Image 1 (spheres, one colour):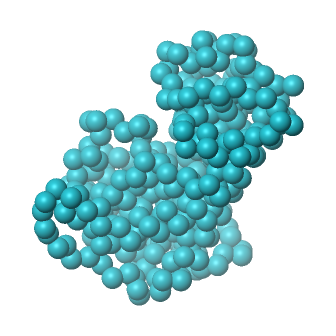
Image 2 (cartoon, rainbow, N blue to C red):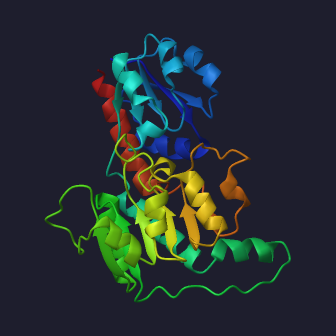
Length: 301
């Protein structure tokens, strides 16, 4: 039976985990995160399987964990936290969990659309601080929503967008014969959409995918929503275009480093809406994800 450590649980995770993990399941030792990189090897020593929520495993760290054979990542974006190429070279299997929260993440993404379109976060902060500045927003009905990546989350996003009267178009890296909305070329999507929502997995093919050239093809004043991974967007170009007002608003649930570094340039911008990588975080989605994580840990390597 695998010897399993959950390296970085949180109080929120614990509450749901205890409802899912039962006496008949593979035993899992729980450690509370966050975990500093230097502390990882000592924590992992003696375990062959690690369940990982948001701990960074660099190549240097992986080399210091000789007994580690399996990382079960809570979600799909393992590449943001684990050096996958190094793990493969070292014989460490990395398992990911997809499809557990398609509706939950899409609902969060749509919430970001509303917040960005009406400057909700900005006005909230102003009013709480004693200010008062009614800000003109965008009425969404009849506008165009462009979905980049028509997997499970993207399809749910399309359903929600159509439900509120948006014209929804999409682009996908591979053909989608059963697409619920029109598939268009990426350049057309970027130039037509008032709101662009990203739903791409992060890998070598998508890192920096939305680069300066693509960002500049977006409609002036458009809203960009990211519940995928920060790495799919070229951040330097994004920040520059936001500062210039060429892009209207960036609403994101994901960052290059999490928790966010104090010097992250996004923190200094007004035309952004920021949430703490919580798009997946509902009890309904969490219970499904943790059940799958326990089952994956039990398979060993």
